[in-house]
Length: 328
Image 1 (tube, rainbow, N blue to C red):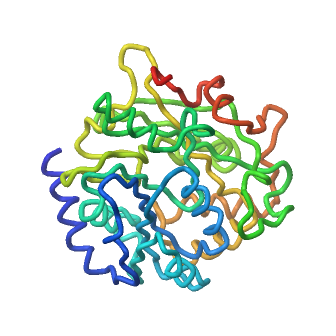
Image 2 (tube, rainbow, N blue to C red; image 1 turned 90 degrees about the vertical axis):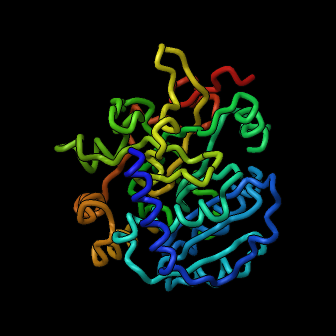
């Protein structure tokens, strides 16, 4: 595993040449700042709410890689005073689906900081997030010398066809995508990386109903106290060294955990699927997007009578989807 980690570090070092600095405001980063790292393409409509949400949580600086957007995303981000921006027209797939670019930025700018690595359609929810800033969580993690914090990806969806209610720029996406699956999840242990592998939810039952084992993984470790030798091994699903992946209690108890509310299933998805099916830059020949394309053509309704409407993080804790552990 040490050799694997070294290999990924070298990949990130080489791939740094693919990044062109658009605006570098990293000198404004304070030693105690919590940083967000993002890779995106054509997410202009999502950016105002995304940035506002994380600023309200307490993120102080955003380090973003724009992968060839042509919808105005780069110009919008360049104008934001708490954003440092890099651009690249290189292959997302050849950069380990963007992980190589972020591993470089994390090593160079994230070392010594708490870092949150998310996509523009992912919204971090943690215990007491309605009353405590993210700094309260990281202070507690520092007290107990915990270096990584997990969050299950929770797919959110509307009631009715995905395109029925158009998403507006700046809108809270969960005004539309207000529902989720309370159950229907499987958990296995990945013995090689020592992480948990979670699948299920609406993507498994609707888009991968015939092959649920091929459904996207929902386990993520987005919040990490970064050190120079750390690397993400596969998106934010797992890290090296492997000890960072052991974010669960082996003896049957519960460690603190969060959720990433996933706002993928909104009206912009149809155009995104069409674009990505042409580019073929996603995992396994864009298998996930092929499943979306096939099913979305029937205007499906992901909602069922067992769907739960989102209220707050306490609801997710009651349902066993996240835990406050011993944080009180």
